[in-house]
Each structure stands twice: as structure tokens, then as C-alpha cells.
Length: 275
Image (cartoon, rainbow, N blue to C red; front, side, top):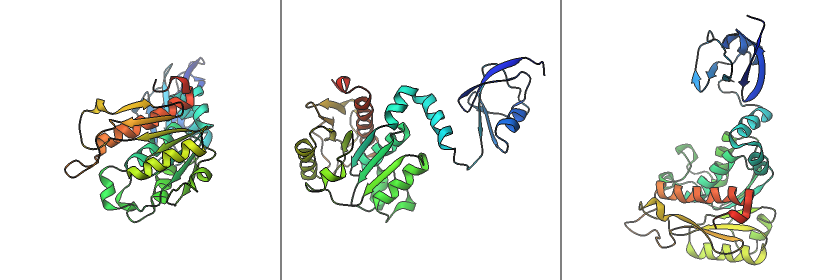
């Protein structure tokens, strides 16, 4: 070693370390037992020399990162302002099918602090064509399966589930404390009832619905549209599921991520969302 210091990042934390260290020796100081060594995005061996400006990540395979460590890694990707806003927010998802399961996964990856999920259904084999579930989840309540999936991604997210059929009486109670509600129900009449109930009984809450998602047509036909001060709609608004034109993973996924992106936009700056 030369006695001089260099600046590096270790698991997204800025550090000054002695010049001339190898990745292995730095690992032994910072994360003994780490068996995955990554420098600047590429795996490396323990004899690799650490250089000025390197981004080093140490991982113990199969170990859950501590909450503060996982948060620091997410902050580095999202920026501190975005992450703090996401962490302090609560979002409701009504329905955990093709839309809702994809929305929930996107939001947990964004670091939303609290997710309130509602669905009464079980995971069926036909769900696997577009929903976030796996073979192991077949037969499970969607609320339980989704909780398992989300906590495998971020075990520090608060996930609250309601295994119920939503109606005008329970909607205000279930979603009373959220900032944004994402409507992801299947049937047209259920969608209409849900949106009308939120507008009437939770008038200060943003709601993001969806309509016209079937098939595999032009991706650019899926749009996010602001219909009023508190209500948004995602989809092409005209293409329902019907014989010969089913619900398929790519187009449903596009719509779900429109919805999730709208959630983030509303939480960050509601005035500029989907104008």
C-alpha cells in the first residue's frame, strides 16, 4: 500500500479507503463472508485491485440486506427526494389480477411505504398468462400470494391485505388512509361501482382506473388520460376482452405500468400528472 487514500463507493456508500487494497481485503474489512464481489457492475475475483472511483458491491448470497442498507441502495437509484416521498406514501390496489399484480410489484420496487391490497379471488392456472404469480401460488388467495411476492422483493414494505369482495360499504373503510387508489377490477359493472364510490365517499383521494386493454395491438394506443381533478383512466378505452381477443401479458403489462407511473407522478407532483 502507498499510504494514500482513494474514494470509492461500497454498497452505494461513499468511502475513503487506503490505496492498493484488493477487493478481497476490502471485503474482509467491510463484509466478511460476502461471496459475491461486484466492481462497476461486473463480477470479479478477490485479487482485483480497487481503484479511485470504483463502485463496489459485496453480497452474501441468500442473505436479506438490513433495512438501512436496502434503503440506501434504493435511494441511490431513485434519488433521495423521490425515495422519501415514496416511503411516506400509502397506495391502495383494488384487484390483484393482470393489472393489480403488476402494479403492486412496480410500486414495491419504487419503495412505497404502505400498500393496501384487496381481492377475494384465488390464483388459478389461467392467471399465469399475464399475472405475477407462479405455479407454487396456484390455489392460494391472491392476497396471500401477492404478499409473499412483494415481501420477497422488499421485506420492509408494509403490506395490508383484505380478502374480500369490494362493495360500497367496505370500500371507504379499506381505502380511507391512502393517497392514491388504483382500480384493477375485471368486470365493467364492478369498475363503475368502485370508481363512483371513491368519487362520492373518498373525494380527496386520487383514483386511477383502466379500460380497453385486450389483445396485442399498438402499444402507443395505451394512454394515461386525466378525466377530472381526482380521476385518471389508462387504456385505449375501446378494446374489451372478448372471444378471439383475450387479455395478454404485454399489453396488460403496459397498462399496469402506466398506472404505476401515474401513482409516482401524482405522489411527486399531482399538478403535472397526465396533463
